[in-house]
Picture 1 (cartoon, rainbow, N blue to C red):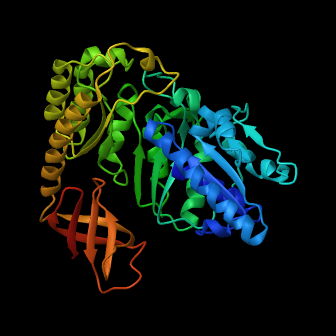
Picture 2: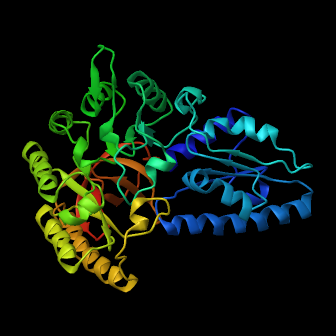
Picture 3: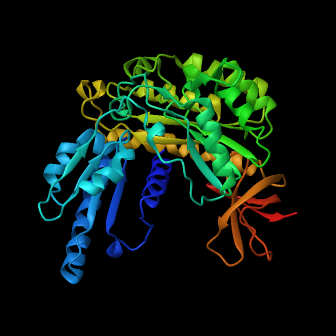
Length: 433
């Protein structure tokens, strides 16, 4: 979602006369877009701000020009005043629901009087209604945010406090942006939301659409070839969406469905509102409709109060589901969340030990899944050049990175059939048929 927000900010600023420059020393405006989901990401924000301070001071000494520095995103929302206190060279702090105001805030900055601006309000009018609708050149694969915020209030998560309550963009707004993305050269769209499958809106037939119905409508756009979405919540995995996986050929057979833990005790402490058995039943229903679908997940290891048995329950669930890939992290205290106040915090060494065990198991499952692709043929959208000579990179329907070589120039944006010859931990390699 931060990639999407960064692209929208870039489009917005281009409309007001700015152009992108990869050299920070040339920049009149520096925008750092931030994530608050884990403590390490917050630490990286302040580290990056220190590097930016050195760059703008050096530029000012050499050229006499003062760069404007803006901090956007979820760290800005959660720690706006702290950023202003710790980083006095920052001119603007703007939250993820207010970045549409960036052009106005930039105009107000006056280096002579060193006025600074903090905008972390949740506007009454959704930001999508305020954003400039012009879309500049995109890659062949692009993100499209359709839903923001969360009403689930998992006890470990800051999203409801930084992104607000669940908001679904109107269906027509999404379809209009999708068509503009396609006009700019996009052939694959990934629909985004904190709880993307909670999306719902009134459609053109005056009925309430869910995500499955929206995907059906997007699939009618001829030039759009591939559709993906992330991230889903188990409680919002309805039959309409599962049937879309079965019936809509443009929807890729890949589902990222986080569970976080295999222990019902821990799930209750996390306020996930589902049990491990309910999660398993959802997976079984999905696989009944789409037997070859790839399942991905998220796991938090070392949640407060987690015992060795709770950890074993998670391992048992992983073995039962058999993931194609998954993300796993040690529990990170997010101040202001209920989990931060829980007793029985787990020792870091125990967290690390449990994380390694889970990651070893997930790695074995991922490699086994990848090896199943050997001697199969995938229809691949070529995304970019690889690091090696004449090498290209694309994605399989199951979200695997596929590398292959070709003598053909300018393949980016093309769709090719690739026969898989080798499988590795995190990627596949093959040959064009």
